[in-house]
Length: 178
Image 1 (cartoon, rainbow, N blue to C red):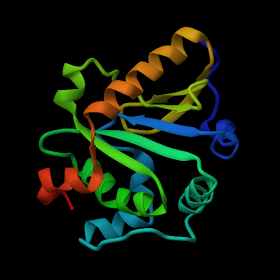
Image 2 (image 1 turned 30 degrees about the vertical axis):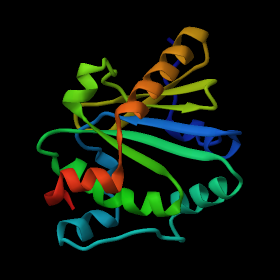
Image 3 (image 1 turned 90 degrees about the vertical axis):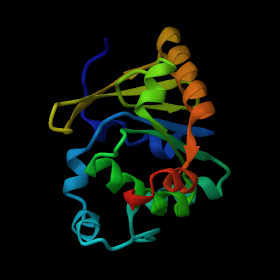
């Protein structure tokens, strides 16, 4: 396994990918979400969407306007955890920015053999695999570019994408989540 490096050290992938940035999110909650300015708004029941001042939304918008794709599949428990409900709510802004976010119940993910770790797959060439502690804090990432890791990530992407449901449609299945 390659060295564990800080997530910040792979930020260049989000600007330099040529075609597709694809993410699998498996956690029940992320520590970074608790620090988000949207977390208190979510707690108060407010809605929020695309924010052109958000660096993430601005980059997604810029990259997708260039014809690149941002896609992700999020695993969701039944019932969703509070962290997952936050992601369902905040994901609408990402979708407005240009991301295609889909959701899959954890039980379905287990049935089709998806892994229990998070990763980004860039251009079907580079895998950024997260190491996340039990509190939902990202400890670092491993960058994998060997054929076995990349092929496995592509297989996971294809299976997850096939079974996942677009965010707005998924929210109809989980009406109390947002």
